[in-house]
Length: 293
Figure 1 (cartoon, one colour):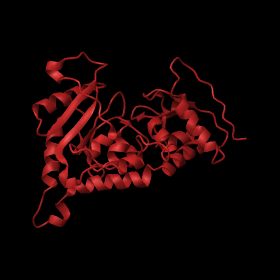
Figure 2 (cartoon, helix red, strand yellow):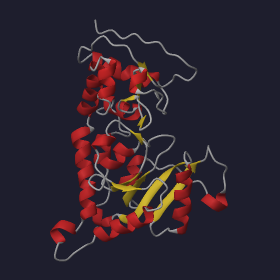
Figure 3 (tube, helix red, strand yellow):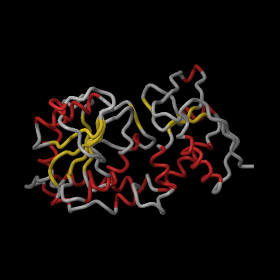
Figure 4 (spheres, one colour):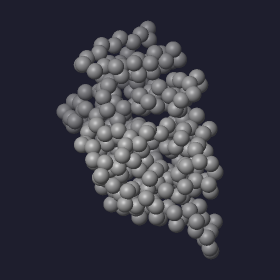
């Protein structure tokens, strides 16, 4: 009958509106099989059992190397997909239309803004204050760690995603660092006309394992120990000339273009909806886990 029956458990259940919205949208388009499953309304993946221990089919917006949650597109990316043709805030199409100045006119620094959700974010801000010629990083909010303006500087205003790309102070290099789990901004950073530097992480969204380091993004170590050298590498490889100019010049620019191409081919509305449908049609637990993205 293509009906949806849902029960909500727990104290904080506001995010159920996102899972409801995509299910209702899909049932208006295709017929889904009879299936029962759990949707995790939090960020952290939950299922830590092994395959041999009969894990529960839990759908989550974030996965990890130590969990068996079945990863579906994040609530943010899904909402943007459902409203993409109607809203004028953040979505993949709008970001691609607001990428700002030409590549040559962008600032050759790495840029980051965010809250203090992880120690490495604080380390990044300290690194930025010591190396302002390479990195422009600042905190917008502090919830998890004590405020210390002498150490981290003053808090700054949040910057919209469009302003990441369209203002006169935009940057060639965008930093993606985990928050409490994976930083859900990555799809939008990849869609913009900039090179993404991505922190090594155990967490992932549904599409991460299709990305290739140094093809779609530049990786750096989890403890940030090689970040400065990676930024310097990017600056050198953006300007290389000589005998192998056709292969090496603007190599970093090509990484940015590859990322945009990946988004256009894998993260558009039809891709997100079809991904959900495929997951919901894998209606046997063993098949679900064997095909975990």
